[in-house]
Image (cartoon, rainbow, N blue to C red; front, side, top):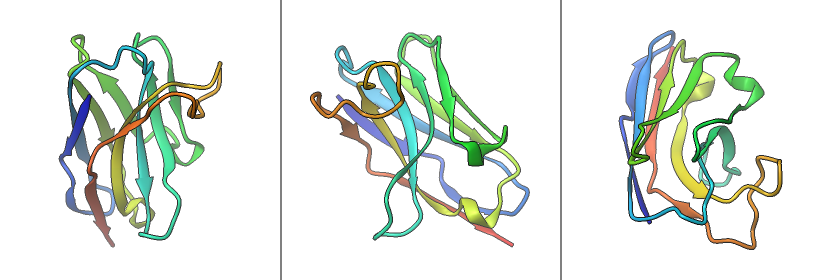
Length: 126
């Protein structure tokens, strides 16, 4: 499977962006798609939002606070993240990831492969 993000850019605080992740290939054993972000090159990538590939379960980080919405198209070929009411603290590189969740958690089960996209930069100005 390959992932390719798009939709990042420069936006003023309070604005919106829509990120997309094009999915090619099979994610058969990977039951979850998620968006992560990395504030700087040396920081850890943190989970922003995730959705089970059956579309029935979603998860959001607390800092999202109802501002972001994750969605998938029915074919599973595109994963989207709608970002509303952006703040300067949301400036980061955003990555799409396909992975298998560990049990009923939203953590990655490292016994299975995980696939990352190349990232798309979101910059929010004050």
